[in-house]
Image 1 (tube, chains in turn green, yellow):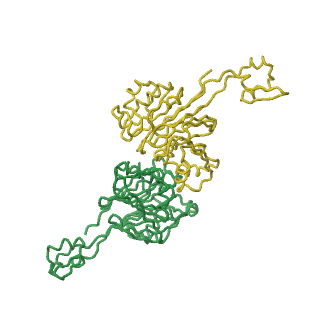
Image 2: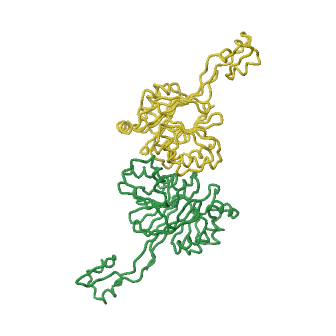
Image 3: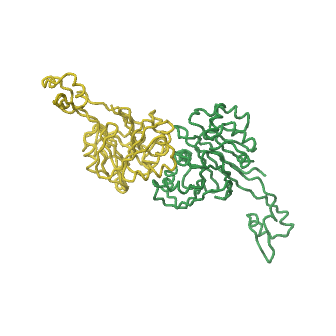
Length: 303
Length: 303
C-alpha cells in the first residue's frame, strides 16, 4: 500500500556508489520525496521511479547535502512535463532558500507552494497520509517526520442489519460518508468495527537521540534513522557534530518498538557500514544497515 | 605540462554513468574547473583528483546543468581545509547567482572573489595561463574559453656571448627578467630565439556554431566542444535549442585546424554517442566521441 525507497544512504557529500540520504514514499498515485541532495535525481532514475508524480517534497533541514539536488530535480520534473503544483515543506526559511536556489531553475511549467514549519511539533495531511513533523537537535533547525496511513474498522454487516440501515447506504458509509435520509442520520461508526492498525513510516536524520524521536516513531512499521558512525569510539565525534552512532539509533528503535530500523546517512569516513551489523543487532535485532536503493512495499496486516 | 580531464559528458541532466559536462585543467600546482553541474564532485573523486587545489572556477553560463554542483563542491573544498581564496569567473550576474546558491553553503574557510565578464571578448591571466573568453550563441549569455600556455624562445648562448652579456645574468634573462647594470639595460629578447609553440585548450558548450569559435579555437592542441546530437536528422532540434550536432562541431574543428576534438554535452536522449564515430570522423578525422573521465597530458613539442 505504501512503497518506500531509500534512494541514498550518504551524509555530508555524495560518493561514487553512495548517494546522499533521501527517501521516496509512493502512495495512491502520489509520491513524496524527503530530502533531495546532490545526485538524488540520478538515484531516483537508477531506481526506475519517476520524478513526475512528486507532489510533495519535504526537507529535514537546509544543509546542502539534503537540498542541493533540488534545482536539478525541479528542472527534470519540468522536462517530464509536470504541470500540477508542487508543495515544498520544510523548516521556517525554506521559501527563501528555495527561491535562492531557483536562480538556476527559473522557468518551470508548474507552481511551487510552500509550507513552513515553525512549531516544535506540527501535524498536517498530504496525499492521504498524516504527517507529523517534530523538531530534533542538530546545529541548525531540523525536523524528523512520521507518515501514517490510518485504516478504518472492518465493515460489520450484522450491526448494519440490526440497526435496519438500508443496504443501498452501506458502501457510502463504509467509505466514511455521513448520510441523512428522512431526518435520520447515519454515521460510519454505526457500521464499522474498531479502527485497525494502519501503516507508519518515520524518517529522522541529523540529530542527537531524543525522547521525542522514540515517541514519534512509536510502533512504526519502518523507522529510517541516521547512523553517522559505526565505530563505538566515535561517540564523542557524534556528540560534537550533533549526529548519532548506529547504537544510539538502535536504542531509539528498541524504545519505540518499531518493526524494522534502516540505518542511513553514513559518514564519508565509513567505507563499509555493514561491518557493524552484528554489533548493532545486539541492541535491536530488526536493524538493517541499509544500502542505497533499498525498497519495501508496506501492506496492511491481514485481519 | 597541462593535465586535462573531461569529468563528464552529459547535457541537461546527470544520468547513471554519465556526469554533466565539466572540465578540469591542472597546471603548475593549480587547478581550474570549467563548469560544475550536479555530481561534478563525485566525477572528480572518481578521477582521483582533489578539489582542494581548485584556484579558479570558470562558468560558461548559469544553466543548472553547468552550475548546480557548486554548493556541494564548495563545502567539500571547505571540508578538505582549503584556506586560499577561490576566484569564480562567469558571465555578468554570476556573483548574484553564486550568492543565491550559497544560501546552502555559508560557512566556508576561504574567500570567494568574482570576475564578471561583460564584453563579447575578454582576455585575462589565471594560474599562469592566458584565458580568452568569447561570447557564443545560446538562449542565455554563454561564453567559450580558450586556455593558452605560452612558450618563450630557446636560449641562444651564441647571441648572448656576441653581445658581451655577463654569464651571471643569463638565467635571469632566460626567465624573462629585464636587468639594468651600470646604465646598461638587458632584455630577454636579446638572448632568446623566436617564441616557440605553446599549448592551447579550447572549451565550448551550449551554442550554435559560430565563426568566432573556429577563430578562438585556432591551432588548439585540444578542442572540447559540445555535440548535443549524433543523429543527422536532429539539426532542426539543435537549431531550435541553440545547440550543435556532432557534424557541426567537427566542421568547426576542421576550420580551426585543431589537433584533436573531444565531443561532449550529449543529449540524455542519446544512449550511445560512440555509434556516430565513423560518420563524424569523415568530417574531422581527429574527433574523439569522448566518454566521462577522459584525460590527456599535453606536453610541449620537442624543439
